[in-house]
Amino acid sequence: MWRLVPPKLGRLSRSLKLAALGSLLVLMVLHSPSLLASWQRNELTDRRFLQLNKCPACFGTSWCRRFLNGQVVFEAWGRLRLLDFLNVKNVYFAQYGEPREGGRRRVVLKRLGSQRELAQLDQSICKRATGRPRCDLLQAMPRTEFARLNGDVRLLTPEAVEGWSDLVHCPSQRLLDRLVRRYAETKDSGSFLLRNLKDSERMQLLLTLAFNPEPLVLQSFPSDEGWPFAKYLGACGRMVAVNYVGEELWSYFNAPWEKRVDLAWQLMEIAEQLTNNDFEFALYLLDVSFDNFAVGPRDGKVIIVDAENVLVADKRLIRQNKPENWDVWYESKFDDCDKEACLSFSKEILCARVTVDHNYYAVCQNLLSRHATWRGTSGGLLHDPPSEIAKDGRLEALLDECANPKKRYGRFQAAKELREYLAQLSNNVR
Image (cartoon, rainbow, N blue to C red; front, top):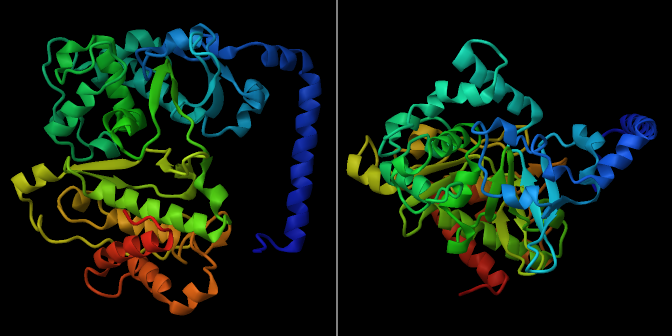
């Protein structure tokens, strides 16, 4: 096992943790009446807790009936608001059930940003609308850029939103029509015409696109159609619900070798699917770490559970416009940095080339190969292979070439051979 800190620092760390835990217990005792109240009360029925009062500066309202009717409840410690300071990412686990279905299923609730990021969003809206850091968001939103497409505007166009987020760093009209047509926070979904949305819905769509487009990625490339993303369920105010997939990939770091080989094969298949598909949209993962993937407990399927940083390039548009070097294969540069989950990429190049190896590079470097580092470990998901595989040397050679190629276009070939080799090892040949 790796020692994460020297012995003296380890003891100091344990002392600090114990002190923090002791302080937390004292706070819990001091706040015992409110603690008991928060345990008994379902705050997911509270409009202010959901921040429904901030709409249309919110993410949607399609699940409000379910929240307000008490069909969604926090799991265990998620009910204690005293622990929110530990929940920096504002991600909660909850149970949801329809009365007519009987039983409940697990869901994940997200505010799509930290408390600080959400507060900055409010201040930004207010400053743009009034010049002051605080204001009535309901009155302010119609005076921001999020409302400039209100009225009888027919289409959401690239010129209006280009660069707002990774999703629309280089949007095509085809992509934006897809976003509008599949927008789940409107009763009139199915039309690519922006004017079919209410003004409030248009503002919600644009705010989500600018602040954190993850819900729009999940809606536009849904799991029901075979895309490797968590299933989007709905939103109420600033609380978004997605389907619970399973434990994060990190929990399988020391799983049996056969299991890790299967997961590695799936990760390479995901990289291939997002790079080359019949829709000719290339979805590039700009943030790849063990925390951004989860594994289904029953089917063992790997799913992307954090899709905030996904850049979508339209290959049809690239072929049509033929930017400089558009048909030259692009090789991502290996980034041997000291930080976790490093990636080196140019968004402009990802947007301008048809053949790109970025997804293979990201998966190999940050998840599979010996270069992968996470939470103080190294060696990647395929660490410590059986002696016969280690002796053969093929797996290590393919992983090294995929992460840090020595030959020109070596990663493309290594990724292809690695997928085939992992399929053979895990008996996943289709």
